[in-house]
Image (cartoon, rainbow, N blue to C red; front, side, top):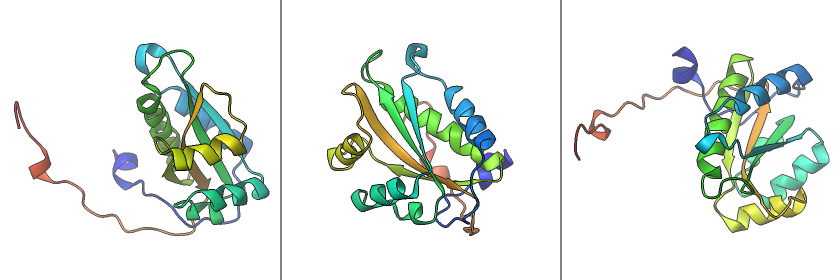
Length: 164
């Protein structure tokens, strides 16, 4: 439970690289996520090229956490198999990846791309995605260089039982 309760979005990273072993563990965890009819529509672009990451920042209005992140994972969904569920499936994979990163001592920040065409189109173009592959989100990954406060998020009024 500690991992679920204490993980925070990190927006400032140290320059330390993320290892290939850490990347593999995070992607393995992502691919263990549940998906509709076990379609596993996710595809991942692992980007550690500073030039490419800097280009992403130019086209994404909320990607400032990439300014110091040594790694960006682009999560995409391939609608070639099961249409209509890639966003739910990719969200589960993204959460798994972020929790695995936390367990590895890394920080992450999820930056939404889908369903907004103004955010999806530049990613699609930059990474030359096939037509059936939809960019879902960007994840900044690295060693945290900050410790954000942990707010209390429990709100009893958001819980309903048996009806509204």
